[in-house]
Image 1 (cartoon, rainbow, N blue to C red):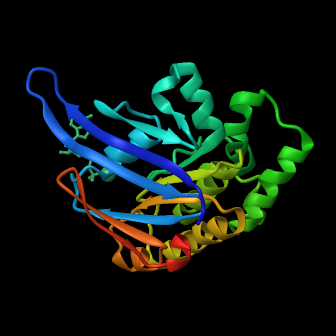
Image 2: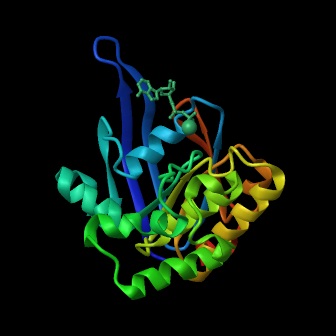
Length: 235
Ligand SMILES: Nc1ncnc2c1ncn2[C@@H]1O[C@H](COP(=O)(O)OP(=O)(O)O)[C@@H](O)[C@H]1O
Ligand SMILES: [Mg+2]
């Protein structure tokens, strides 16, 4: 059985100062290396909050997140930023590409954040990733000059440039039509299989969940259903 990559232990989250509202009620979750997990659940059930805590974009109120054995609680803000940059890729519903830069430059940004500049082999990797997501003809287009589906695929290539062990995708196909949803999902699955990258993908699309290795359902800050569809993950 593959090793556990992501482990959460008793994660709770309260929002508000005077009046506290608990939106996560003690989440215990394990995600293995190479596992593609879909996360379903009604709007407001806590999916993004949980994803942001796993991705160290937000702090939990209680509990601990371990990534490959490292507790996020043990890292200071700089350590977290570096850990996040090197270990995790993020894909959001809105792609957050920098519009005035080219597609290739956008893909290089997570690398530039720690390396300062990109060596030719990194530029080559960026071009290869863009080829993989079907954008080899768009390398030098400005990010605001390509279609929404293409922008989301560029964001996928960007999430991969630092060769992360895990990708957190929050409704990555939420803004896309059926054809582009299919393209984006198929790229995510290819990445998962080729690089053994672990995925947690929030989606409202039950059909995509059925095509994942496992799906979770959240309701009112709890995981209420957890089902493996691919028994290979448990071997
Ligand atoms: N920054 C915040 N401040 C206060 N409440 C928040 C904040 N972020 C999320 N919430 C609340 O937490 C609950 C869960 O939100 P969220 O994680 O965004 O749900 P989902 O992604 O499943 O739609 C909701 O009730 C939401 O209003
Ligand atoms: Mg959300």
